[in-house]
Length: 136
Length: 113
Image (cartoon, rainbow over all chains, first blue to last red; front, top):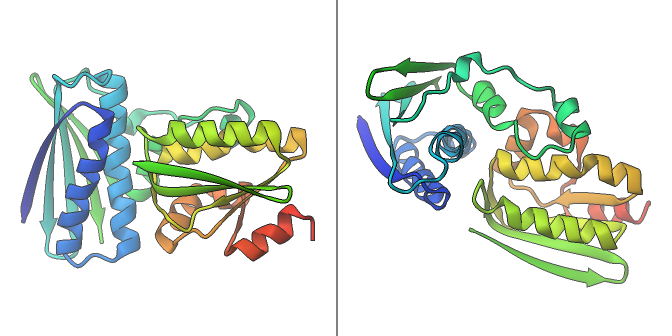
């Protein structure tokens, strides 16, 4: 099954993205704790793109494309037209440095990496696809 | 959307976090904890009605860990649902923050019992 969703780049739209994902995943009988972590990972990537790549410009859009393969495999494509940020190559800060520096950000992509099995950036001429893959 | 309510019973200040804490709403949690830590040394965070937390919310808690130690403030989080608790566990933040099952245990910790 394939599901699509498109939203303007506004932080207030994150809740709608989560509702969409929640609906899709619950429809496919995935356990609640797993649903929540998958929703979280996609929320983190979308929040990063909306805030850092699109500076919360509501005239820009991001698209979600979720493919569920039976009950065993899910692929989330997050598509945008921004500069393209390679999540796979992102260098992680350490938790103790974040605590020491009293930083409030910097752990979103760490969560995505822990939750998903594969993360990929497919950079095209017109669009970037951030592909998150999870085996259930 | 998050709703935050505060209560003060004797010398224990409680922040009740209701709803969802994400990149758009974490600022409210931050303001509330910031204010509480500037005035009180016994703080409980009631998360019984916290339905969702993202890294923005986790980051708020993390950013106060040093302040709590430096100022000798006791802050205890309680009432996390299984799915929200799991989010704290992914990066091991449940080891850096004081988290209890319920209000009674949280009270025990802030009162130094």
